Amino acid sequence: MSTHTFYEFPLNERIRVFMRLEQLFQQFEHFVEGTTIFDKRAAISALLDIMKIFNRNDLKSEILKELDRQSKTLSDLLSNKEIDSEKLERFIKSVNGLSKNLYKANGKIGVKIMESGLFKSISQRSSIPGGMCSFDLPEYHYWLEQGHNVQQHDLKQWIEPFVGIRNALKFILNFIRQSSTPTQEIAESGFFQSGLEQAKPFQLLRVAIEESSLCFAEISGGKQRFTIRFMSKSPDKVRPSQVSDNVSFSLTRCAF
Image (cartoon, rainbow, N blue to C red; front, side, top):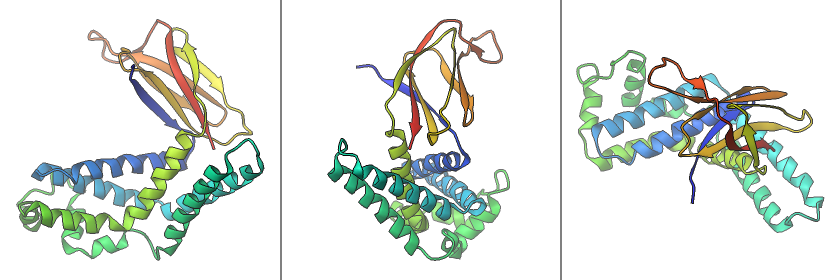
């Protein structure tokens, strides 16, 4: 059984922000389970980056818009007799449940986390390179030396306001990724270009190549057209260059 490496490219700013948040949540969830001081530092750094994105964007509103759009699109499909209506209704119920939970969250998400004096101090020093050393933040140093259970309790409290957002993002992105059927394509001399139908709400491109391939996919484009270049790094070159061989790959134009 062959394994593949996936390269994804968001086609609008909303999905771009969602994917950045998805990666940060995954980093947090990974490091929060670690037992070393550096695991906890990495979890805190991911949480700080999550906070920065929330401070710059009205994410609750953006996610609710996307959930409402998905709910409407799914509801319109109920009249299609070729679709499993029971499965579709379960999806609609899930979408509406996620929306309902987010509507219940009052105020700006993440504000409460700053009520923690420790986290506020960490946040204030985080913009300084190396600014979270033990001599800068002795309280943080003390916290890092506490038992795993104490740290887990605090970290779970700090991430709690974002759980509803995390669940909604996971559902939205997974649904988008599974919304279309992949096609098999050939990039001649490592180059592939194609257009996108304007009538369809394309949100994401997914490229899959075999893990054994000695190249990576560099994707660029917009709402109407996109380009994929397969690049490789050679020891005698400073920068990667486009491969000269044809490359077989799987392409999913995710539209939902």
